[in-house]
Length: 136
Image (cartoon, rainbow, N blue to C red; front, side, top):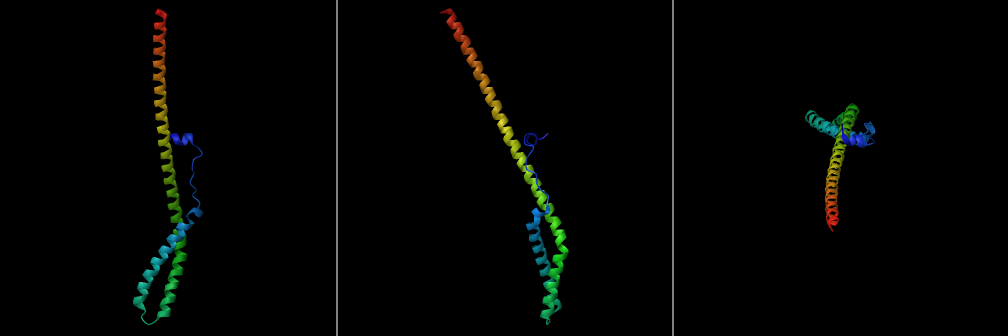
């Protein structure tokens, strides 16, 4: 049983909503479409030497088609990546909380041991004083 989860039941709960991954999805989509455009440019350059306008239209057609085809895949991939990162961060936070709790427990045990030994010394000193006063 996780001590931190028991003591802190309202801890951070990562959201798996796709809105959290929108920025990552846009970045991954732009990178994949750019890579696709570079590959298409290399292919079109070898095919068409004199038809620059046709090459330009074909390149933009590849870019738009790639954007349309890759949008769903990139969105799902980025949502999974964000969810995994959130879970990892939550596990790290729970581990840090458990470590802090363990350190607090160690200090509490040490303080209790010091207080107990101080109480024992006080009791011995009081008993020694009582026995010394009895003989006076």
